[in-house]
Each structure stands twice: as C-alpha cells, then as structure tokens.
Image 1 (cartoon, rainbow, N blue to C red):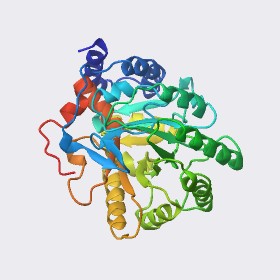
Image 2: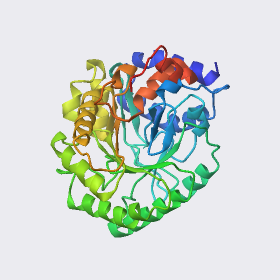
Image 3: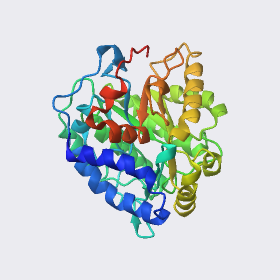
Length: 376
C-alpha cells in the first residue's frame, strides 16, 4: 500500500476527532491543501488493473460500461486521473465541469475553493465555483488518454456563467462540437451548479431560459451530431418531484438521451437536522459564510425519490428513443443501488467515493462489490 493510501486511512480515523479545531481553520486546512493532495493521489494506479465481474456490465446507447457506478462531475475537472479510476474498475470516467473560458473558481476569506467535511454525517460542503482550464485545454488533455475497454469517457459541460447568455450559449455549442471531435463517449450538460452566479435554484426548473438553452442545443447540436454521442442533462437534488414528468417529456422531445438527478443541494435548513449535532457548528459556519452545495449521505432519500419517479414515468412512454436515468447523491454502499425494475441505469458518487477510498485505498470498487450478486 502506498504512502498516500496510508495517509488517507490515518486521516479517515483522525478526521472525526477534530471537533476542537475552529470551523474557519478546519475549512482553510482542507481547502488550501486539497488540490495538491488530489494531484498526488491521482498519480496512483492499480497494478494490475481490477476488472469487475462481467455480470455487472451494461451496454447503454451502444457503449460498454463494465459496471454501473462511476465518479460524479467535479472530481477530475481538467481531464486528469483517467488511469487512476480505470485501474480501480470504475464503470466510466467523467471529466469537468468544463466551461468555454478558464475559471479560477471561488476565493473568500483567504480560502481558495472553500470545502469542508462533516465526517460523522458522511456529508460535505463545497463552494468551488467551477474551476477549470476551459474546453480547449481539457479537450487536449482528454486526447492524450489511453482508453480502457469498459471505462468510457464522459465530459460534463456548462455555459460560462460570467458572460452574456447569448455569447455563453454560442461558446457552449462550440464546446459541444469540440468534444464531438474527440474520444469522449458521452456528454453531461450541467444545468444545476449552486456555486456560481447564474446557476442558482429557480422557482421552476422548466423556466423560459432553460427551455431556450435546450431548444438551441437540440436544434444546433443534437440534430446535427455526426456520430453516436449521447447527451444527458443534470439537475439538482432540489428539483421538485412534481416537475419530473414534464421535464423528462421535454428532454425526450428535444432529442436528449438521458437525465441525471442530481447535483448538490442548497436547502440548508432542511438538511441541518441530518447533520450530527457535534458538526452543526461547522455546518452553520460554512453555509452562512460561503453557501455552496451539500453532498453525501444526507441526499440519499431525495436522490432515490427523484430517480424512482423518473424511472416510473419513463416506463409509461413507449414510443421513444433510448433514454436513461442516472442517480447521483448519497451513494455510500451497494444497498443504495436499487435492485428492482425501478432502478436507474447508472449511478454517480462523489462524497461516498472518497469515504470508501480513505478506507479501502485503490481496491475501492473491488471492496464495494465484494460478494455481490447483481440484479441490476
């Protein structure tokens, strides 16, 4: 086992015992050292590679996924780390979120890319602000990847929030064509990021600006694709369950290929009671100082509810193209991946991934599926 894996194991044991550290210092320690540590971590890889059981594999949109679970957007922002997860047996690799222009991300109170954890609650907060190198450089990074069978490449994209919407949409379309001319296998359109201006939660998911963007993308990209390149749309875990049928109908009508529920949550008051009492002071500090998005186990119920409603509605639509539901939020164990006819097709994780990584190291997917006989 490498030094980095041993360090993560030790940190996993120590982290819940740091209640004496002030919230501001705790956040600064984790935020300002996180990027350097992740770069070191992502340089590791299993040797030999772990290959999941063939019984776990799925073929969706004509793409082979060696198993249905992989990282959510935000973990590999700039196209780095493919070998890191492929060697572990990930079902896919998702880069980004990428924007047309490079972004430095958020900075406040001397903290760059604010992030904190609530280990006893298996939850985290982040206010990163979509830091990334931009479409062009990420495209170049992805072009250098040596792909592994069964671990397809996805890219999460978003319109640049800091520029005029007409220009941002034009540049988003340029990015979509750029990634079409690459070895990307699928695209995820991020329509819900609480960490940047212009992506805040609206009263209605199906607002006129969303419909305008979807219409433009459908007309000027989806209908003109020159190869098999599924495009799915990602929404927040704060999406109202009552909006899901109309949302799915709209996406299918426009020619999209799937939907992901969801991104993080900004419902701080709702989820505060789910935070361990000894971590609420840290929770209050972060949400009141930075805001940002919540991730982890506290989103388990909402993400499962949204994905189940989506799957059930999808089954009522018989005359349609291939369309799949993806679930993100609160995936922490094999029990969180439904084994019924109401199951989503794919799953993504982020906070749960790092929880397992700190315990099992690079054997993360092997341990996750140990002794599991899938019906998914």
